[in-house]
Length: 146
Image (cartoon, rainbow, N blue to C red; front, side, top):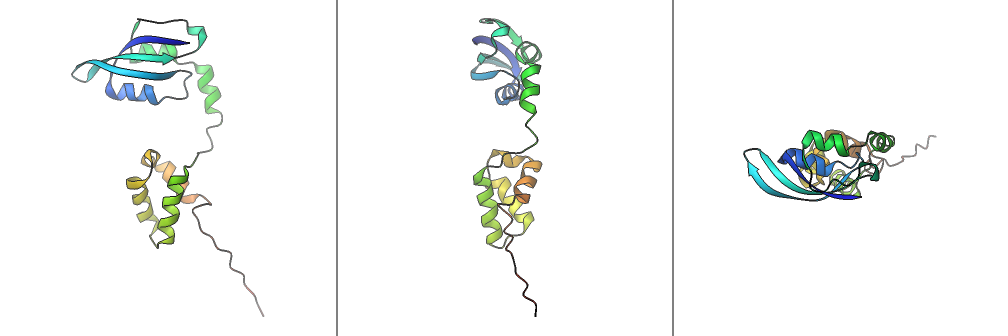
């Protein structure tokens, strides 16, 4: 079900709502219509569960939007498989090339922060990339004893 609502929030709060993929709602489109200081008014198209009903034309602030559209059942269901971090091939390729080129691990981390995808802003993600088997070029050395 899709509703067209108005949300009063800061730019950062709106960015958080837009990037929230675990809460049972999805913001399809938003447009800033007015800004006063840090706060702004947005026209928002949100896709949500049928149990909420049509909310067309209603006005929400950040907290009331979350209370209305965030579904704890979906959030719990979506976070069950969150233990495993999905690594992007682009980031793995950058790290692999860095190591093959002779760069140190600290330098490769910095290169990932600059040239990697948006996920490289997270230190835990970079740690997962660096520890990945695809990046670690562990060549098997055979020890033939006499």
